[in-house]
Image (cartoon, rainbow, N blue to C red; front, side, top):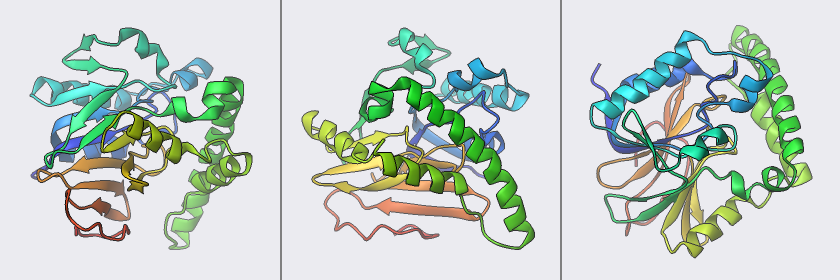
Amino acid sequence: MTPNRYRTLWLSDFHLGSPMCQGALLLDFLRHNEAENLYLVGDIVDGWALKRSWHWPQLHNDIIQKLLRKARKGTRVVYIPGNHDEFARQFLGLRFGDIIVRKRAIHTTADNRQLLILHGDEFDGVIKYALWLSVLGAWAYSGALKLNRWYNRLRRALDLPYWSLAAYLKHKTKKAVQYIADFENAVAREAIEAEVDGIVCGHIHHAELRTVGSVLYANTGDWVESCTALAEHFDGRLEVLRWMEVGHQTDEIAPLGTRLPTLRTKTEAI
């Protein structure tokens, strides 16, 4: 099968080293999608999970090797560590197998928009002010994901569509205690202060592509439950790719200067 080709791909929150990583779908995505630029937007390796219990199957090695192979074959790969792989932040500016490690990056799209790229944990008050609470939340989230797998096996047996119990519980809980109630606005303010047109981040495991005030806000999602990535087409259009069993679905924003469509989930590009 001929791979899909994009100008740029952004992926984050693989959580390699965690049994919750959807490694098979991630490797399938990497095999079927190519890009000139590839940004790894944090939490690629889950150092927190590895500290609790060692889990590193061959599949996770295959994913790392696939990324390295893309870099060797000419894809420009930039790795921006997150809070779960913060150990890599000591290597900022260095190269590992043609992959460059950065704290942040600026990307210019084909239609001349400047996008600031960062993981986003610095905007989460829980990470910044109460690390122990975040670790506790990660433990509870892991438990919810395990329950989610059994729950969706039952739904499949009943011929019902996939529904993320973990995402629902996480969203409701964080909203209730205001863990990340202002996350998107805080990230958007950072874009304004940096005098760029938009910002791309990960961290909160919720793929999004929309305007917040005067700037573009894009979140890559994750490869634990939603299996999403952000893509730039060769004309500068951006869309969220959803690589789940239900099929390829996208949210899209039109090129600069084009009237923005109402964002919605669909099967074809606008």
